[in-house]
Image 1 (cartoon, rainbow, N blue to C red):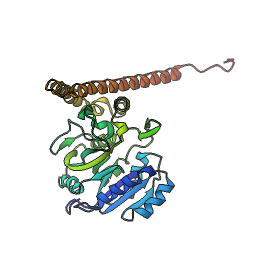
Image 2: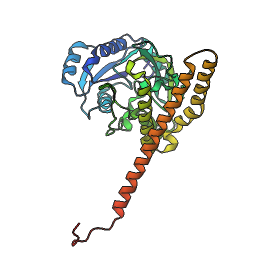
Image 3: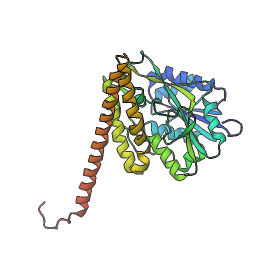
Length: 338
């Protein structure tokens, strides 16, 4: 993305006309980069009215329709197919990048053994940040969380709202995995998240399997502000989102194997979570009235994720057992009345 690493295409999926102002801010922030993007692609997910607005209001971008299945996976794959850059950068329509974002991501690609990079997603609170919410669980609204590296370091998981990947590598594996329908998360009838299929994590693992000699890097200087809906900063959302994550991890483990699918999660549970609980309790003893609440939020989130994982795993096993019994059952005779 610097002169030595080639050209860059930025892909921004969007779907909700009520987020037009945020989309305009996102595209404007991309235009202010210290390293200019060679191509900006806004992919509108099956919303003709938003598509027409975008083509008029965003002249600096190529505004195109999602040509695949409805949802963010289809939209991202459409953007990847349109991309001409040597590196494809992905973000979301509710983000606003720091001016050095592309330059910071691009610094990772000076190393030939790096296949992709992911960056720092900073929560942009529309209401004051809740003092009780544990930073270890900022991932529930798509932001970077306590436990990620504080310096440039290899990681397993790219985060699709702030990631860059060599175009040949994502094309080599066929893009994001299609056919996974994420469940929408609603608060008061309004969709506050489109569900989470872990398509970015699965993509990272698939590319790593195909190119084991190459790595993903986490670049904390590649900063993007990510808007947090106040309805996401609640205990109910924390529990529902954690449950969904647990269920998604079960599906991921089935797809890629538990060793790769749960590699990062083991460290998170064995190191980050105990430290977070200890810190919350320590803060409470030091006089912070919200410290115990943060420790309790961590425990509640872990419990909800564990329930989601266990129930999803049990459901998969029951489904597999039922399928096996059906295959093993002898065919009915022609004379059977059943």
